[in-house]
Image (spheres, rainbow over the protein chains, first blue to last red):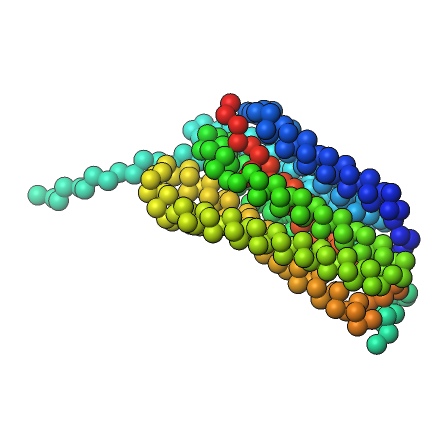
Length: 111
Length: 215
């Protein structure tokens, strides 16, 4: 892991891409994109940035397979948890997160 | 003190020791990702259920401060990448300066985040749905949004604070020549943690500052 130094061009190039994606994400938000597409685009761009950081800055491209396995499986579990939970919230009837109305009536005392 | 790391008795050589350290950090980061996954899932589930109030909550946050913090953290990551490179090339002074630069970026992030929290609290928005804001806005989803906001950004702030401390400690060790080019893997492992903190923020930024437009 001491390894050879990364080329400055690679570092600057990868961070140039990350800065550019930050600007793209900001411009899309300011352009007024909304709804499901806004979420998909914003999270998609964040995922792309994460992949660039992982591949170049965290040196996954130069890592042994044991490290790559960990770096792939952890995000897979994250995605699995997120997708299954959101699908459940969207599709279950009655909605699972509805707060039931609170019964505030005072029961009448027994005669 | 020698800058050459001591070979622990259970490793055959330094490259194997360095690889074990790197794998250990990746396993730790994997568990950290799963920790944040629970919080992100909470956000996603409640946003799916209360899209309008979450949108209004995001619109209430300060986009400029959030964006400035994004650039600060990304710049910190850039600096620590160059710091690792500098140490591998034997340029210890540059490595120390760049590592301290990264720690400074972390401090700047914390100051801005503190300012942002102070502004929220002056508006009566406290963690756990406490404060005058929630009396004026009694819809329970407001309390859920700001609990998610304080929870996620709060845990992220804890990670940034830990990162700043580790970076400063590593810079001190480089200054004392306890970490030199032969032990550059130690700085590289610290940089892995910092890049992870950066990645978490790259997701928090759109979720709490960008997704604000009405459908």
